[in-house]
Length: 208
Image (cartoon, rainbow, N blue to C red; front, side, top):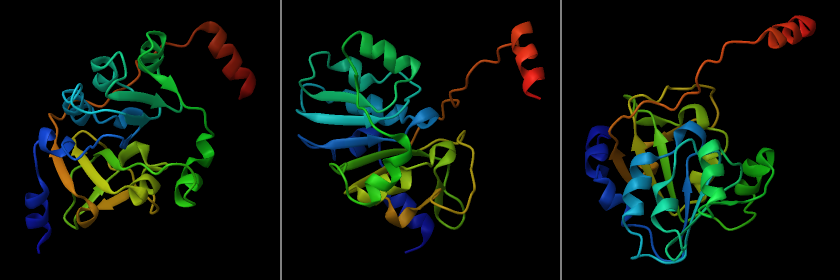
C-alpha cells in the first residue's frame, strides 16, 4: 500500500477517533504546547457516556474540555505530572489533579514497563512528509516511549507544528498510526514577550 493510500484510509473525524476510548482506559495526551485540542474537545463530548477514564498530560498549555465537561469525575479524571497555568486554574476548581513524578525518568519508566501503560495516545503532530513520517514537534521528550506502549495511536495533524529534528525519537511513521485526524490548524500556543526590567538586565550583566 502506498503512503498516501495508507494516510487516506486512516483519516477519520475527531468523533470517530475518540470512539476508540473505552471505560477504564488511560488516555495519554501529548504535552506542553502540543496539547491535542481537537481530540480533547471531541472526547469531552462523551462525558456521561464513559466511566473511569483517566486522561494524562504534562504542562498542557490549553484548558482541557475533558476536565471542564465532567466536574464530578464520573467519566473523566484529568491528571498532569506538572501543572501549567491553565491546569493550575483547573486544579483550584477541583477539575484537575497533580500526578507527582520525575520528568527526567518518564522516558525510562515507560520503556522499562513501570507503572500502568496508557491504552490510547492522542498525539499532536506536524504534517506527514513524503516518506510517511509525522514529526512530534517541540514535545518529543517521551512521546515516542508513550506511543510504543499504547494499544491505539491517534495523531492530530496541525500545519503550524514546527518540524524539530534530532535523529532520535522525534518521528512517527504512518504505518504505526491507527487513526489520523486533521485539526483546524489553530496557532501554536506561545508565551508573550516580556520586556526586561532594569533588575533583569543587572542580573544578566553580572552573569555574563
